[in-house]
Length: 94
Image (cartoon, rainbow, N blue to C red; front, side, top):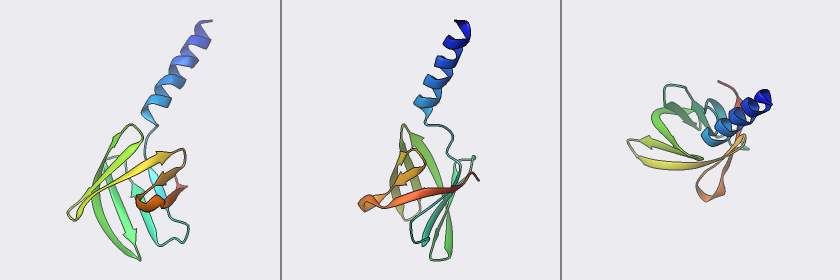
């Protein structure tokens, strides 16, 4: 019984946090990629040009802050949904 309670607690905590955000997510054409690092940094590559940014998480929302502005991505399992419904799929664990 104690083992089942521990397992349920672990699953509940994992579900609430959304898990750690690390790894590379890219769009279908490979023209845009987000490389999330554990230090709250993300490297955004668009058409082979890379810029560094900061990110925070709030539930399933990832808030990316660059000098040019702020972008919110919605997390859905191994995908991120960006502006205009653009989908970024996890490519690696980082």
